Length: 101
Image (cartoon, helix red, strand yellow):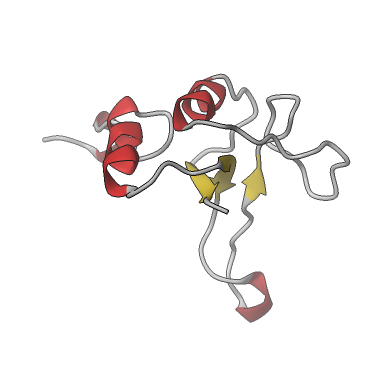
């Protein structure tokens, strides 16, 4: 029986996910940031979401951190940075938030 933990991650650390994102985008983004998604639902309404960005120091930023959010020119750069994160929380998904303007 195949367990969820046996599957390749459906996030930015998986090269197949990177290729999937590239194939869905009609045009390449101008820049992007990496986001660690954690929990579900808005905390104001009883949810547990606690999403955090990747800092320029290569670590997931803590709440109220003064470290700037890292910005990447390509999905490949974002993927490489995601692979090096050392302070990722359990049961999170690393995603990318692109901008085109």
